[in-house]
Length: 215
Image (cartoon, rainbow, N blue to C red):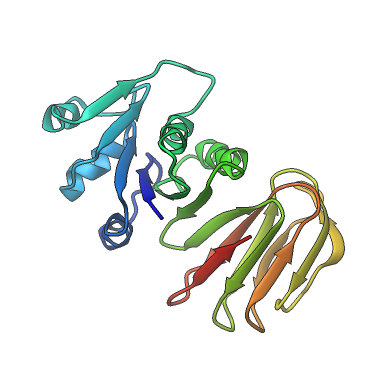
């Protein structure tokens, strides 16, 4: 399946992590200032998109032959603009680097975008700490024993059932500001997570090679 890679303007990922996901990408997009990171790493994107308020003039000069789309719509973030571009090109697998870290308001907005577009494609945020995946129905993860996993509700999430965790949920609810589930531990694999209503952001801490499948 075709895979897109988006480089956002959050905390700089390690070059090694970037190269790993670029190697499996068919299309590489920079969300505005993410292009500054691309030029530092020495890689050329297929598309630069956003309101272009964060990209450096020197970066635009280096990427003068790259397709650049300036969109002044202030009702969507630069990352959302990049996600929409990938979805419109029928990419069902989208990896995003640089969406976390940095300003907290930006990171929270990016997690909201992950939830918002999760019904359109399988979107994974990746940083040097781990992976973030949105769940609207169910998720199965083949993980090593001892892997840290957190469940963060974007909206009120009801009738959550988990299997394979040290502290399993059994038809319980999570709601931001009321109850979250952080730093749980994998005790058996595969881990199964089901939610009847709402959207959960699942954080899986990096632990060697984590294999993720979604249904």
